[in-house]
Image (cartoon, rainbow, N blue to C red; front, side):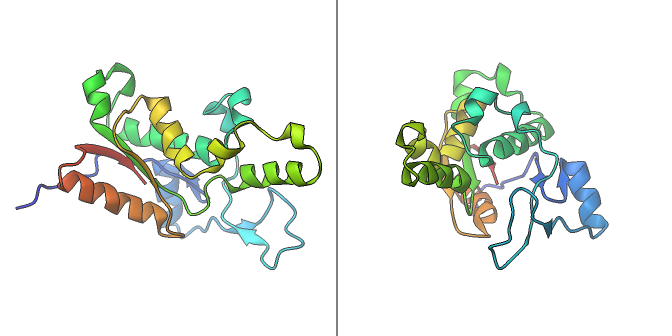
Length: 191
């Protein structure tokens, strides 16, 4: 018989609620998080609606200096991860090195650091080569998301990003499930 796998905590940062309680209330009320795009002017696009995350304070999760070289997805992942750890009653600060090695990270992202990469390409192609971030390549890859979360919380286990379009986070949870069940890693922060 295969070992059982349980979910012990959950963290949510979504267009219709930040935090488990806000998200649950919105879902139960049938509230959609899809609205007219407000973070940029969508006039040239065929679609003018999206699931943006309003009122999210990025600087609560990364400092202003760090924010210059990471995509917005990093502070979003930090916030969701912190809530999941708190919900699971896992205190990452007091963990031993051995405990840190027991926790892997597998996150899903359909888009990752696109806005950061696009800005770097815009600078490059508009002749502002010296303004391109030194972090252009490392911060523009999908793996940056799990790496940043691993470093922030001190986890030293498996670190991976699944990118499969809209099912990326669900696939990441499935990936974690399979790896726990197979004995590869005893615990994952996944989503």
